[in-house]
Image 1 (cartoon, rainbow, N blue to C red):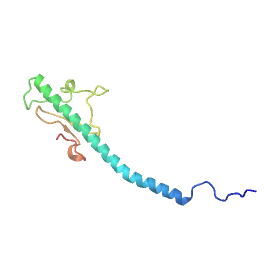
Image 2: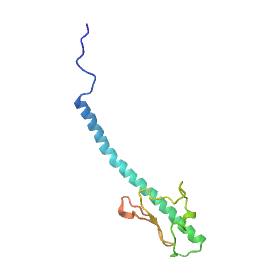
Image 3: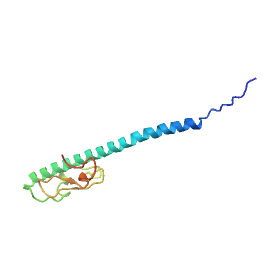
Image 4: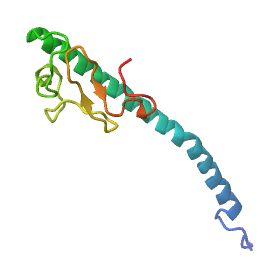
Length: 123
């Protein structure tokens, strides 16, 4: 005759709490690293967009015989010189900033600039 086992196949409360604590610890380590990596990635993409705008402004100035200090109507003047995204628009700052450039010879700027870390400015 077999005796019924009194031990059920479920986890105890202590075992469950230990698993939850370990998952919480891993999340506490991973989430800040993920947020930092995302911010760095957004800044790098923004800086690359600023480089494209700067190169487009230089090409626009050469092709239209514009001297340094000549006005630029952004984005209309530079659109033919920038690789457009799938929506046929100039790429936007991935963090929500707005690009601007007013004159030939000026560096393009992102409205986020130094207000975020890492900064969205051309080096």
